Length: 375
Image (cartoon, rainbow, N blue to C red):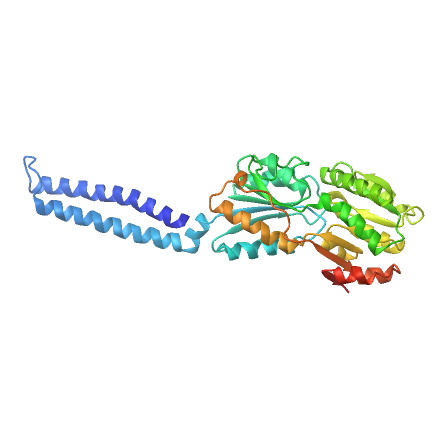
């Protein structure tokens, strides 16, 4: 659509200039040869000039329209979505869901939409430079995954619309003012991870009834982890579960944690949403298996790596749901006019291979409720 509008405006502009140019020179030529003394051009000359102007406009219009429909012209006018994701996990399911949802809305990558993806594959928690880089590219929309990336994008721009996913509590973390209206250039799909943290603790006690002492690993410098920890602590008091909270803030803290014998004090390990923790998740999975401890997480992809169980949103479904919001913004809606959404459904995932490796028999009633079993 932008290409068509560009073609029309370009046609009008250059058509007018070329039409006037030809008309002026035609007038001067006629005037010098036939109309000595400055007499007015006759009606036939005027008609001939008018006709030439019309054909000039038509010709230029065809040229510009063909350019707008060509790959070069289309590439210059199609909207762009900038994508910012954290390190530690593959976010392919999330991005595949986003692409799939946008395609259903008529936005096809390479034809009517372009992506710029800043997806760190290594250990990189400073998202500010990457967020700034995306904002400077001036995409029509920024798409983020996680609380830290969303906050970085928000700091990078106050004008480019931001659609977030995987933000546990967007209000408490300072991303938005409220669920009904963000009050800024941000909207999205909350993972509802913080309130679900209490539910995951309850799930742990169902899967492993003997787990009464739980190691809670908290990335103390991340708001999403601190907020989630409060929900777990409240649930633990009601359930009579003893929590051993361990705050971590960097590589050294994890190095020390992994050296310690955890099974001496803990019956299970509980992870909270965190960009820092997810970077070290492979080592934590290995440690939990070595000490035969159940490891409960919030992301299905971590269970597929080897954690015991998770309960939360599905990455692909997050992408599909967020795509609808991206499409609304591309069609002209303001983020502040689009209410924040929560996942359409939550998924219980259990890794049977891990259960067998740590010698844990999952109760049948829990297995029957599982949405996905990893074997």
